[in-house]
Amino acid sequence: EVKKNGKNGFQFYTTQLDSELYERIELEGYLRKALERNELLLYYQPQIRTADSRMIGVEALIRWKHPHKGILSPNVFIPIAEETGIIYDIGNWTLREACRQMKQWHASGGPLIPVSVNLSSQQFHQSNLVEQVQLALEETGLEARYLELEITESMMMDASVSIDILNQLTSLGVKISLDDFGTGYSSLSYLKHFPIHKLKIDRSFVTDITENQSDQAIVATIITMAQNLKMDVIAEGIETKGQLDILMQNDCRGIQGYYFSRPLPASEVEHDFFVPLRLPGNPIILG
Ligand code: C2E
Ligand code: MG
Ligand code: MG
Ligand code: MG
Image (cartoon, rainbow, N blue to C red):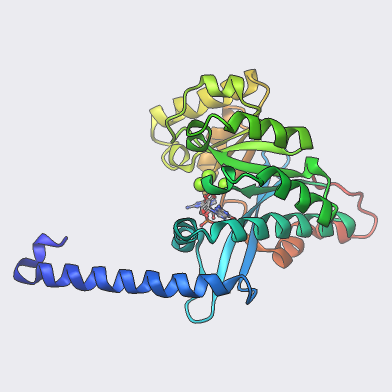
């Protein structure tokens, strides 16, 4: 809306740029310290099986508890972490912390479900990724089959080494999910050649699914294709009962979204989703 500001437009623009730049530099400086100061934390968003509304997994989503700005979203600081290379340390921390938390839940009688961890493209191309994943599993004691790594279509596209890395990760016993599926520019033939266990249908196809026939058709097609390829499906960003109903009519078996739960601190996941485990006489039914 710069032009509408007339004479003052340019002034406004530079001022805004300056403050954005300033904020970036400020964040970058703090971000380097954030890890050491234990300001990073993981929230966990339950993934729900539509058939019985049980939690079948959680996605670990990073947050930064900034000393002055409160809880910051990854969209604000992950791009800075990627540009500055801090992402390697953050990524390794995230892997370990997610594995540690899930192992602790397993060890304390929580549901035997997997945790999903998002990888950034830089991590995916770091030479010791497989080693780092193996270390995280060894150091925390989490079984590999309870770790899922989320990658995006573009990450598969931009290097010939990708399939090799994915095969190595899969050999460890780790599972691979394709995040934001349908928004990238990948060729469907990748699904045939790469060891992908799960497709996560991007929220952009879900948002208008109750009114938009094209979105409905796309989602139905992805679900059918995944079933034929023996892959699991999670639809992302379900916020309403109407969206859930249509997804269930199309045989979508897994969902993730605010309708069931926002991403939560670990303690709240325990409080809200482990409760049946604590009722006397109840068998372990989650997961
Ligand atoms: P993503 O992996 O696609 O994660 C899903 C995002 O959608 C999360 O945002 C989640 O809070 C949000 N979401 C879930 N359900 C709903 C819903 O019903 N409605 C709406 N409007 N949003 C919903 P979040 O936590 O802000 O994360 C944003 C992105 O940041 C993630 O997208 C992921 O790409 C990245 N990210 C998060 N944690 C990490 C991490 O540990 N490492 C890396 N490299 N990236 C991360
Ligand atoms: Mg994700
Ligand atoms: Mg996603
Ligand atoms: Mg994403």
